[in-house]
View 1 (cartoon, rainbow, N blue to C red):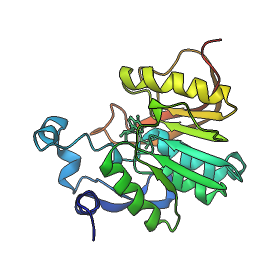
View 2: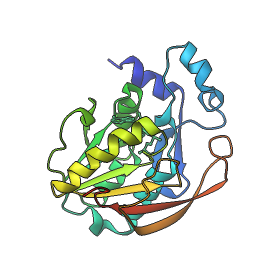
View 3: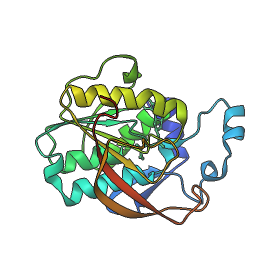
View 4: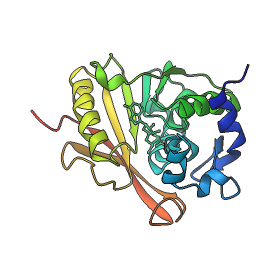
Length: 219
Ligand SMILES: C[S@@+](CC[C@H](N)C(=O)[O-])C[C@H]1O[C@@H](n2cnc3c(N)ncnc32)[C@H](O)[C@@H]1O
């Protein structure tokens, strides 16, 4: 039986090619779906969280482009797509030959979207639907953190956790289009993409999104 989250995702999205990654089709909101126009306030009145999962954010698109063009980044590795949203980076990691891919999301609509999107792209990923930040990170080879520095409370929690993951030996990549809470240090640029976006979502039509290798910000 289809759960209510999966039904909601299906009913409020259309299969769409991500602009920077036309190889992948995802269940996303578009101008023709009411969700695109719904404000966070209206959604909150209906008990719905902001539908981050309904958009392929610049960070996720940049990761997917990197992984499809340079499969050696994830090939043969145990990969975590942290805060996976619609799952675009996780899907690209599977397609680039990662040995195992896990997508982490705390939003039940997002985990439903990841289920639908992996099926649509004929891949499968493990999904962790609990808040991983409450416990020390496991031994990942590669952690992808796309567009996670958009709010201070989130950045304040995720960056120390990523520090810990680096200390445990993980390679941590952050993809960021210039969000306010990107750390000021510990970042080495490895790639940059101009990601088409919408003025309904962002304040620019193209967001230059940089993929950084993240090293610990504190000694
Ligand atoms: C801006 S979206 C980015 C999604 C995706 N990484 C991308 O670039 O398309 C941020 C996502 O972080 C998720 N999130 C927030 N806190 C989280 C946590 N503690 N663990 C897992 N996901 C989390 C939200 O539910 C949301 O889907």
